[in-house]
Image (cartoon, rainbow, N blue to C red):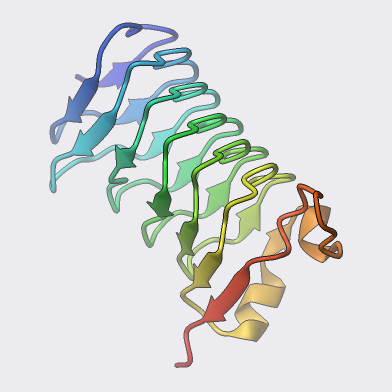
Length: 171
């Protein structure tokens, strides 16, 4: 498979990608609500996850993004309500607007030092996030271009992303 096009797959519970998939196009698994697990082989060459690619994959609990990915599109994992954690691989440069918004079960996020842009409301309404680990130091984190919700104050009942424990790599 060289790519998966718009709304190609609708009723599946498992997606596996070998070494020859290059891009998951916009809307590829859009509204594929029964999808539970996405797996990429070690030699996967997927370079981007398109906009709305896994939008409303409600039962998605597990995805292992390959190290070849450099961008995660806007709304890519929006409303993946059963996703509990995400490790964004080193090499990802951009996380699009609302990429992980409304992921109601998301409790932990790991962001690599390679990320330079985190889009507006990337984790909006993912109110169960407890820990975000950034694999860089504080000054590197400060240099990342981020949506304005990263600067707001946490208020009970707010969907502002501040309210988690932010951890940095001490090295």
